[in-house]
Image (cartoon, rainbow, N blue to C red; front, side, top):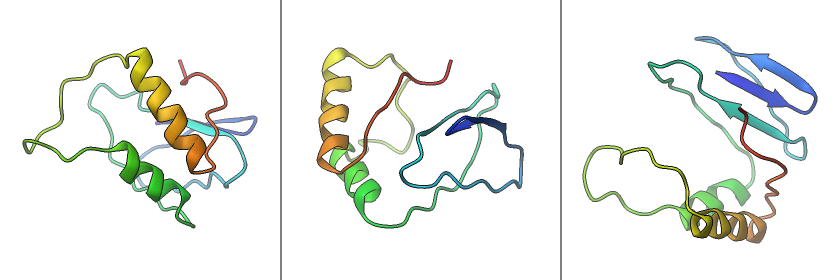
Length: 94
């Protein structure tokens, strides 16, 4: 997993712990073809509330096929984040 935390570009492997403080822009990208498992712990309810508002109940016990987000999906997520004091400050990591 690659993370950008402020000005730092960090690679994290299995078992590593990293902190991305609230108020410091951060992003991550899974670079392994096998995927990754990670645990995110947040403080306060902004992020949890945003996830609940932006999510939908699964209709089957598997992940949907990956697709590029539509402009409408991006707009909806941007609005939901703004309502919860979360700023999207740049494009995803490439």
